[in-house]
Length: 510
Image 1 (cartoon, rainbow, N blue to C red):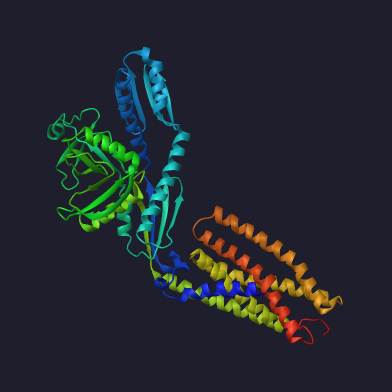
Image 2: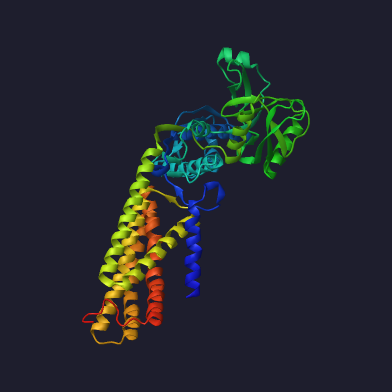
């Protein structure tokens, strides 16, 4: 009994803590988009860009690998879906095929045609790539949104290539859209000194293995770079906004992981006096000259404002998106709808509780009063558990809470009617009390476990509001069984033992 009382008091204190201001509590129930208002974004992952980039990277790998093995090829070209080339000497066919097998992923297929090779994604491979890309994009979107301080965002896959993003409490999603709209693909590349960027741009012929990229702060300035990326964003261990010790301008200080530090130290040591470019999303932020060997620590400067350095550091910490994201749909939900929904839910809950109390007292007298007390304790347990989970309460969640009240009454009615049957059969009061509870418990367990199983399926197979409904129902089932089997039993036993009533008010013929 003492343990039961302690559980009710503890969860009750957690439930009551929700009336405190949000900043004064570490735990609490959050309001969903339909109650609090906020922003709704539907994003689409550009899979065409992912496939094109994979094919382009494969083309560069093929060029380098064949050159290293002294296998002559011609006509190497890549498009949005395919990489292809022709062997100069068909005697190298088997060796070239083995090299290709080592370069391609399991999602690609090689189609030889005489002395020509075609490499592309097959249908199953493309589906696997899409699933992997969506999963990675969702995790990175979650990391970026969490860093903005958004509480309990809903981020989930919708369809084949879309991501649903709901941001409760965010009335102006422009900053979030700006963060999500940048892939934040970072790379350090050596400057190609074999030709002038001006001449290359004028002729339109970029040397093999190089690329022409614009400067971030001036679209008329271009850099000719080696396509090979020395350091990529995946090798970053940390990135923080800071200030340059000499110029006091905002910069981003970064730390590389051991693999990146070893590679960066080796490359910078071999290329002292040569320029290298810091490239972000296919734009050159800066192209400093290597003055000394650089290992794990460095900084990125590019005329940033303080806000820009903060945003860039956030992007680099959360990781590069695997593909561009396009905003397909955007909606803002005002808090007025949420306020009306909360009031309607409160009224429904109060009316439901009053109706249940009247029914129980009218039918069972004092025993019904004790059942109402147990139901109130059930509500404290429910809200206490939601508080511990930091759950997001939505309108379907409120419906689940109201339904939980009815479920709690149902369990008490089963118990009381079973005790009434025992008394009608001539059993003594204590015997009827014990037998009624013991036999009703199995029925209550069976019924509630069935409901719990259905709620679990709703959670794993449903999405959004359906999950919120299943969470409140699941917690409601657990708290209802606890309150009906333990709390009601304790209250009824205390009343019978200490008040010693002449009769139980629901006894027939009494």
